[in-house]
Amino acid sequence: MKRLIYILSIAMFFNASPSASETPEEKGLAIAKEDDKRDNGFQNFTANMVMVLKNRQGEESSRHIRNKTLEVEGDGDKSLSIFDRPRDVKGTTLLNFTHKVGADDQWLYLPALKRVKRISSANKSGSFMGSEFAYEDVTSQEVEKYTYKWIRDEDREGEKCFVFERYPVYKNSGYTRQVVWLDQKDYKILQIKFYDRKNAPLKTLTQSNFKQYLDKYWYPGTMHMENHQTGKSTLLTWSDYKFRTGLSDKNFNKNSLKRAR
Image 1 (cartoon, rainbow, N blue to C red):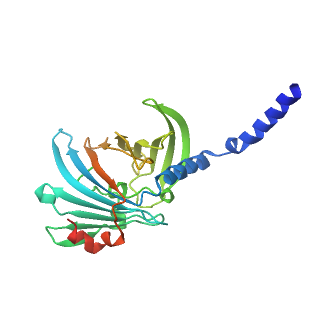
Image 2 (image 1 turned 30 degrees about the vertical axis):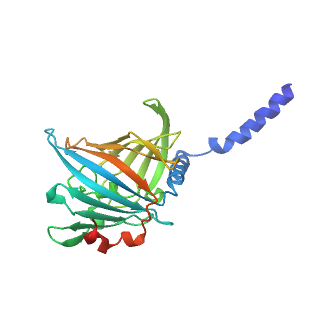
Image 3 (image 1 turned 135 degrees about the vertical axis):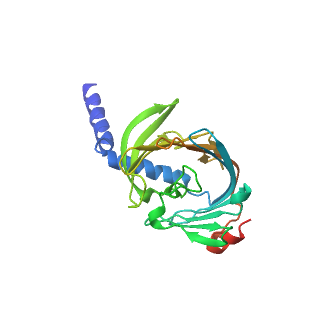
C-alpha cells in the first residue's frame, strides 16, 4: 500500500510540474489565448446600440448606433458604426480595421463636412464621439496587442474569475496597463480597470447582462464605462444581435462610410 501511494505521489508530482513551473506571464498569455479561441468563428454580425453619455452633473444625452462586424482570418476584425440619432450626429460613421500587429486603421465620416477623416495613430487615446470610450477601446482586442501577467484567482459576484494585467504593446496607447476580471467558466470579461500614462486609475469598464449566441459566444448586453478623473460615464446598451448575415469585405471600405444607411 505504501509503495502504491508513493507511485501515485510521484505521478501527481510530474503531472502537476508543468503548471507549477508556469510563470505569471505565461499563465496570463495562456488565459488570453483561450479567451480568443472561444471567440473565434462567429464570421460576422450586426447589432443595435444606444449610447448614453452622462456628465459630472448627471445630465444625460443619448445616441442611437447600428454596428456591423466582420471576422477576418489572420488579422483583427473589421467594424462599422453608423450613428442614426440625434439629428446632429446622424450619418456619422466610424470604420475600424483592427490589426494583430501595428496600429489599427480607423476612419471617421463626418456628414456635415462631407469628408472622411483618418484617425491618426497618435490620437487613438482620444474620446470616441464625446464618450468615455477611447478610439483604441472600440476595436477588437486581439491577443497580440498586449503582454500579460496573471495576478490571482478571485470570486466576483459569485463567479470565479481570473484576474490578470495586460500591457499595451502599442506605443501611443493612453494606458500603461489594464486589470481584467475574466470568469473562468464562460470566459466573459466582467470588468476592466484602466490606468493612465502616469499609472493612475483612469476608468473602469463593467460588463453585464450577458447572453449566449449560436450556443457558443457570450456577449454583454450592457457596458458601463466610468471615468474616475472626470466624473463622466458612458452606458452602452446592445440589442438585436444577428449573426452570419452575409457581410463581406465589400461592406467595409472607405466608400462604405459615405453610403452607409
